Length: 364
Image (cartoon, rainbow, N blue to C red):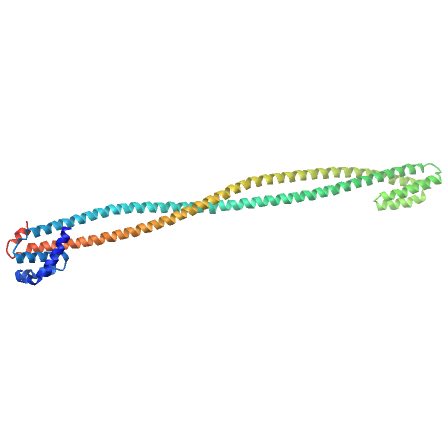
């Protein structure tokens, strides 16, 4: 404050006494004083030199004041440098902390994105596909089991009908065999022949072998011939055996068909049970996966906001530090200018010696 007041007073004095400057100052110093007046502190020095020269007073206090001013400026420079160094260290710590937050947020976002894109999303899709496939498998299996049950029922009905046909045919053949065997006696009666012919006609209705039916009908016209009767007997016995064999095969086929149906239904039920179990397991896994996706997406969104905040903080800190640096550089430039100006003033004091006493005072 005292140097500011000193500067203001000196400017006022300089403005009132500028007319008298050349009368008391040696011509050799005029050029130096003119150069000195280009700076604020130079103007102060010239004003006081002019004042002291006009009044003929001592310049000891003035010289000492400028030396003190020089020390004060150097102190301000050192203090500003120290303050700036401390602020720089603080800025670097803040910058490091913010960049650390940015790096951590970017890393978290990257990890979350990798987890979602390469694990959770594909797993969700795989589970949904597996569940859909198992539902389709269950529907297909149930449909096939329904078809098999319908077919089994139809086969059972056909089997029963086939068995009944065989039994009817076997019974009819048995009756025919009994009647025709009676014709083997010598001189069978007309009644016996007619009865045998009628039963034979009924029998052919139960037979499916068209060739056999044709032969039996032809032979039935000549039952009076014993050789014909023998042929008929042999054909009927053969047909009876074939029917018994066919009936046995029908029973075997039905048993096999039932076993195959039961095995198919058992396998179908097992397929459905396993598919339903997989659906339960995969559905639970899908629920957990969906929860992890929601959690990870929320975490990534939060860290994205954190990253934006950190980037904004970094921008604010960078701008603040740029302003702080600009203020520091302006102040240092101002102080260095003042330091140079004061040094110039002191050099002028050292060379200015109109009475021979001033130089000795300034060089102490």
